[in-house]
Image 1: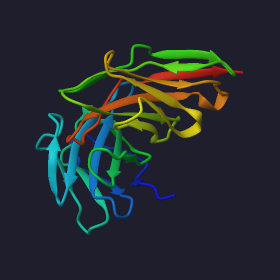
Image 2 (image 1 turned 180 degrees about the horizontal axis):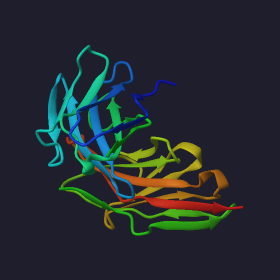
Image 3 (image 1 turned 120 degrees about the vertical axis):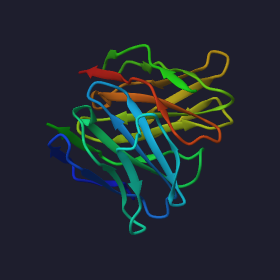
Length: 114
Length: 113
C-alpha cells in the first residue's frame, strides 16, 4: 500500500538555525499539506500546496516558514530561524483529489529546538 | 471558521464492550467529516469519512460513525472493542470546497483486557 514518508524522524536544532523537513508524497497525489502537533495539543493546519503554489496558509505560517516541491517529488517545509515554540511534531499529508478524499499522513518529524 | 469538539479526553472500556468516541462540529455549509487514529510514535491513520449519502458510514477495523446533521455530531463507534484499539482518536472536519482539516483535541481510548 502506498504511503507518505517523512525524513528525518527526529531533528534536534539550536534556536535560530534553519531546518528543512522533507516529505515524499504518494505518487499521483496532487494536494499537499503540512500540519503540526505541539506536545499535548491538537493537530493544527499550517499550509496547503497545489499546482506548485500555496493554496492556503494559517496564521502560524509566518514569514519564517516556506514550502516548496523542488524536484517534483519531495515536498519540503523550511523554517528559516527556529524558535523554541517551533518544537512540535510536523506531519505531511497528501491527497489525491480535492475535498472529498481523505488525506494520507506521514509518520511525522519530531522537531526539538533547544 | 470550522471547529471540532471532542468532549472526552479519555474513554475507558473493557474488551468486548461497545466503544463510543464523541465528536461535534461547527462549519459553514455542508461538512466533510473524518476520523483518524494515532498510535504511539506513529502518524495519523485514516479510519473513515462522511461525504454524503447514508448517515452511517463504515470504516477500517470494524469502526463506524453516524452523521447527525441536526445535532452536528459524528460519533465514532465500535460494537466490540479490542485491546488493540487503545490509541488516540481524532475527529476532523473540512467544509465542502475547502481542503484543510480542522481537528479536535483528541480522545485517548484505553481498552482493558
